[in-house]
Image 1 (spheres, rainbow, N blue to C red):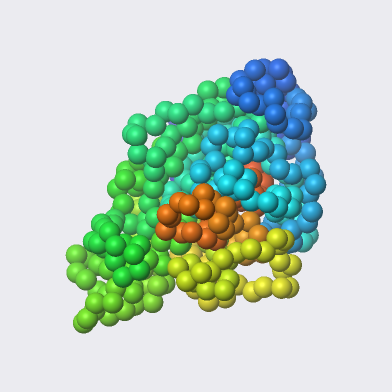
Image 2: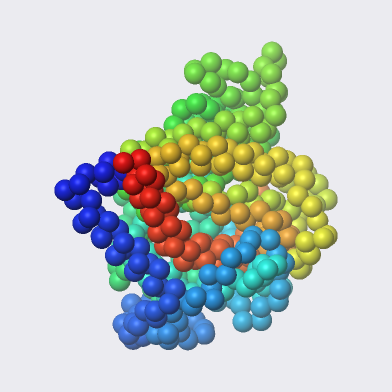
Length: 433
């Protein structure tokens, strides 16, 4: 961009084009986007008649009041009797293991909360606004099954407007591509639970969850070679690092995590976690033509009580914690701090190239939701499953739907933030010349 702005023969036209686009984004905060309501609704899935409440053309308006500055990630859960905004029968995108109502969860109170920041309000997700903002764009989820959980939540929240069509290039459900034809918006998920190159060394391993060979300095090309053209990337990882792993650096075994093998140093879990994020961010910062926004979605803690996941631990609470009732600690705190530290380093490096990093900080909000997991309601009682009491993933509908509230709020602000960054870049270019 600096080189382009420096060329006198086209600098003025480029500035005008950028200013036009940026001003258009800014005006979204002031001018309603008038859309024909029936034209939205005619694309809905046949099951959409079950969905409430109704939405109207004015629902795409983005109000100036929605841009009040505050830390949206610090707050409390408050009752929301209007939720949920979809059901397990109206949304087909719910993964079986998160379909809590199908498998007999008797209580429904866990669905009727919303996140309220301490110093401002966070509007409930508006699918019309979201789809207008991302019209003609693409969003990639990179990570594990919790990341996939987030994508399925987004699909369900958007189902009030339109259902996507499957344009996946493979039958592997770990790599799915969905497109919203009326908006030319594409969602894609890339399975990479460790974010780096990995091989399964033993399908069973010390804890019967496998033993994995992690090449901590090598890119996972299954996603790093595929995401350069995306407009938004949400990257996340966490729970797979609890599994026994062998750590390799430059092709050499440097240690392991809970491999229980003689003469191999057992390293802290955060050793592999830090190196994996460092390598993943290096891969992102090495993209030559990427012009989008990178979101780090922070770690969402599990809530096993009464034992570990494989020792009878469960999550049976029926309501959220208050913020003064629980503290982030132990491995969850270590993971969170590690992510933040590596994010800051990557952001500093990326900013030098004009990369845009944003923090989607879901940790505090999800720490307070021990009631939102499937527990034993992610399968039939007779099924033989590895995670019998699931206190890692999130029921749909459920508290993970709040992540769409966070994401939409950040996308609304992105136009203004990008515009400001463009002005700062242009001013810096003028000074240098």
